[in-house]
Amino acid sequence: MAQNSAEHHDNLVWSVSTLTWGVSSVLLGFVLNNITDNELGVIILLFCLIGVFLILCSWLFARQFRSIRNQKYVRCKELEAELGLVQHTNIKHQNGSQSALYSIIMLLFITTWTVVFIKVVARFWGVELPMI
Image 1 (cartoon, rainbow, N blue to C red):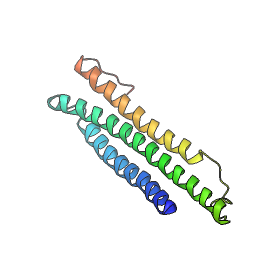
Image 2: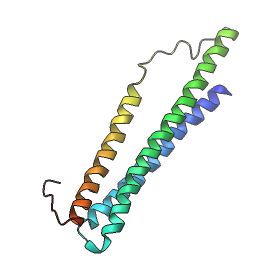
Image 3: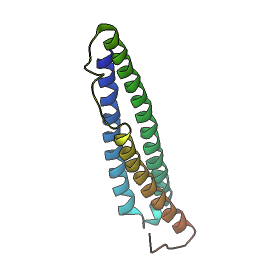
């Protein structure tokens, strides 16, 4: 049951992430296609905030799910030690490598949304930022 729960929480990480990345990308596409439409200014600004919030929530959920998954695999190893088994105990891998890459992707999403947010706010103040 510990392994089943660990696998379930690992699947949750990727399900939530995939869904969030997809929704964020579609939302970003809408924002970028309509960024110069002054009639949609407040809506565009709100979508930028939603985009950042979605990514931050997804990142938090993924961290929680990974923590639960890791706790379950620790339990698997404890049970193996008691039962004289080695399936999980003998697996060797670099800890944190996927987490680091995952964090880079999340930071890139947040950076993108922040840059778009800055551009939208600047337009409200009548400032054009051509480099953005």
